[in-house]
Length: 439
Image (cartoon, rainbow, N blue to C red):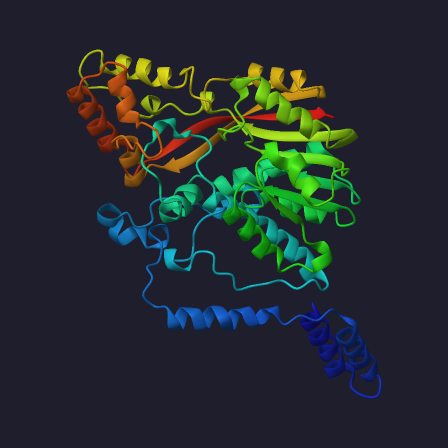
């Protein structure tokens, strides 16, 4: 804005001359002397230097000219037009794979740039969460081999607009939590920090604690927090929800009480099994005891039992009679497995669990979510991989065999899925439960 003011004052000076011209010159000098200063525009030269040094990485396919090689090489496929989305922005990959995570522009905390900085930070956090987190809408019961999450997670999730969806989940949770500036907040399942960083913005006069499930996650959060002034950093704990009370005691914080506890997908981990009953109830009772009177517990939980069915994604015309029905029955059976803690519960079990744990005024809402998702070869390979005993899971194809399909029939299903799904963008449906309860 200073450039606009100075240009305007200069134009006035040119028109009126001296001695009155000293007034617009004075106005320009005063504006420049008192306005906030930032040299963040130098980020342009950092980006330019990086492009000059690293000329090898490929431009992402969806940014290449679709008029030339779209059929042979998939150029232009999957491009998401930003102006078709809310606020004319979409979480899509624009940097080459080798440069993912590289940050050039760092808005300062001065003037209007502070507001820009908050917007940029929120979007980067949603993108980061979309890139590094495991697939929540499709439980691991459909896959077997250990996945390389960094390999194709970004493209997969960018095409699915997952960054945008995660930002929506974040907004819903904070709307329910009704955070005030002085509140003390706990992010119970911190992950990439999607909720942690937003909590810091909303409660600058209170405090934020984050519970990371493992050392790698905790270290990543701590490295990100190093950018903040020491007094504004979150307190990061490493452990499981069941260990929270003991972790607080180790820090001599046994008496601490939170105004709000927020969590995403608390029950996708095997150590908090809704169907197990007593042990999970005991953990939730401890968590309730860490809330202030009338404190809020806000949870967003993907419902794996209600996630997208693969058999609904393909056209079964031309397949042997009865095969479609067999696959449907087998796949539905996966989500009804009584001894699998990922899927042996549903909405009513979640609600009952919180009531039995002593939470008050529980409110539960379910929201359907639809993504546009590209099915990659790596995804198909995982669905139709071989058993992997090291993680104790079986693949989708294994499950079909257990349900009575012959090897020949399973092979026919695999061939059909690969032929009709590979590289295709499909509508992927899932459901998220939002729970608000009081301690």
